[in-house]
Image (cartoon, rainbow, N blue to C red; front, side):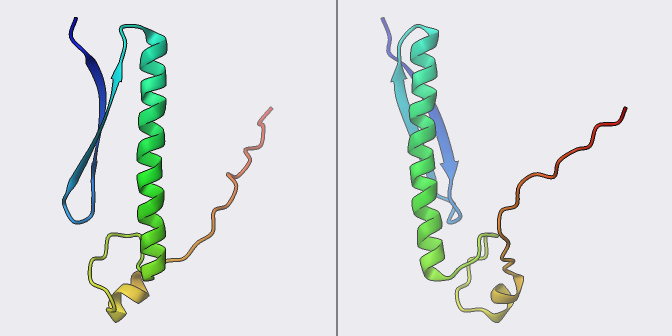
Length: 90
């Protein structure tokens, strides 16, 4: 029987691709756990990239040039806010 993999590909700002793959069995439970493992791996890499970007003082909009005054003006700092609540219309 051939081994089956679940794969994810992430394209970084510099154009490089990172590929993640996890072997899974021939059942739904194995597929579910494989997807969870992929999610964990990709989330870990993204967290590391965000921390590096924060340490550099760069902004998260994809600007590549460091130290540019334009980039500093284009960076928007915002804090996460809870989703607005919808009112019921009766």
